[in-house]
Length: 116
Length: 109
Image (cartoon, rainbow over all chains, first blue to last red):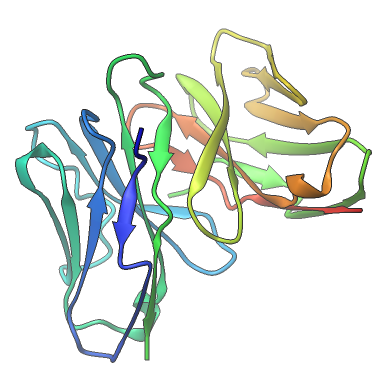
C-alpha cells in the first residue's frame, strides 16, 4: 500500500516568508510525528499527534512553528517568518494500525527547506 | 533532547567485511530501534529489540541490547556497497522516539 508522502519535496523561500509543509500519513495510522534534521545531524522531534488527543508540542523550537492535523489524517506544518536557521529537512512519520508493529514509525521522504 | 548516541560517527569498510555500530542511552527504555537513512531523506525501520531481549537477528543484521550498560550494537555481516547509509538508533521510552545523531557507514566495493 501507499507509504507516507510529503510535499513539496523541496522548498526554497526567502527569509521572512511563511511556508507550509504537508504530510499524508499511511491510512489508518493514528499517530503522526514531525521531525527536523539539520545537515549531518540526528532527528529533532517537533510535534506529535495521537488520535483525537491534544498534540504534544513540546519540541517546537519557537512560536513561529505550528502544526495541525485535520480529520485525523493529513497534517500541515507551518513556519511563519522563516529564518535561515530553519533550513533543514522536515520529516514526517506515522505509526499504528492493524497488522503492523505498533512501535515502528514509517517515514516520508521529507521536505528539504532552504531559507535564503 | 537526544538520548541515543551512536559510535562511531563515521565508519568506512571494504565490501564483504562486517560493520559494527554502537548506541548508548541514558534512561530506562521500552525498546530500542535501529533505522537506516539514505541520502538524507526518509528513514527506514530495520529492527526493534525489546528491553527484555538481549539479541535479535534479521537477515544480515544482528542487534544486541545490554540494559545494564544502557547500550546496543548493530552488526551488519558481509557488507555490500548498497549498505552505504546513515544508521540511527532510537530509544522508545514512551513517545516520541528519541534519535541519536547516527553513524555514517561507507562500504567500498
